Length: 73
Image (tube, rainbow, N blue to C red; front, side):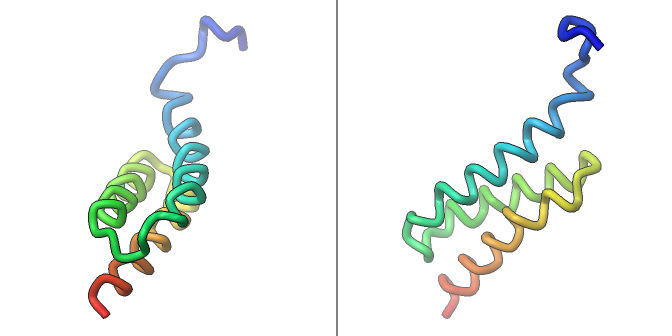
């Protein structure tokens, strides 16, 4: 399929999934108890799941859970 015929709705979830994994890797160096990072990772995971990418949502969701546990502990 030529690039100019690809719709945004078709490629956005794939792009978001790739970015979610990259962002999760990048933020691992940020303070593990930083709540804002955990909340944003949760939002990314929820968006991915809501857009038919539940497998890719596991990476940011797992990191969000680990951060929230660290913040609460």
